Length: 295
Image (cartoon, rainbow, N blue to C red; front, side, top):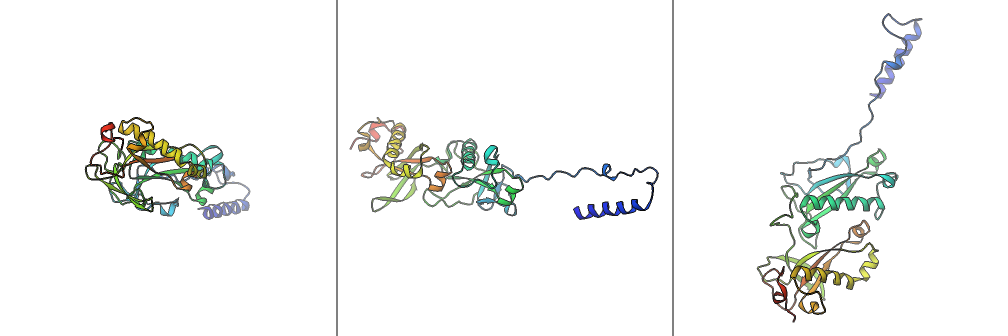
């Protein structure tokens, strides 16, 4: 379009130079007869659509949304816009930057509202997707909040699914974390295998602890503080006293974000009660001292 427009202007100017006046009914000023060019529109992805593949970067060439009733891997629950200093940067937000932390916080809030609860309480992963560097240079300042159903606590593999994740943690939520059987390797948890709470099991999810805004290294050094925070959740969940005897009722297991996610603002720590010396065959929610006796 630009080559054609330039060629027309050049040709018209040459014709006008041959004559002393313009034909009747026309003026000699070409510039006021052309409509102003339409401002370029920056692409913004849609919320409420699903995608066949997980995207780490929102390349336009890979944008091919599908209806969420079809098989897919992730769903865009929310699309936000960066502003202020984060939007003024020459490139999309880097790991640990204020921009990515702000986007992470917004995605967490919006994802929780969409799924009907704290998303970390279920087999759900939420990722922040920014535009490509080229799109950013072209003015794109959006970010996508993409969510997917993961296979388990330990592998993070995103399952294909049909149907929206909206409301997925309401009511009798199939994706909610409940009871587990830990497998051990040299006194460390190797894997948490989901099990029905009515079958024999040794662990149960009790809640999410929002850790303080400290460095990842400081967090890993303070594992006893994290266990203490998980014990508070355990006591409230099982309705037992949070006192010196609690450690003789049940132990605690926790899962924390990887370092990069931590630097990006994810502070959600998943807490579990753990009974190693006997089988549990019911949920310990509200079980009280009879359900979790001092042993």
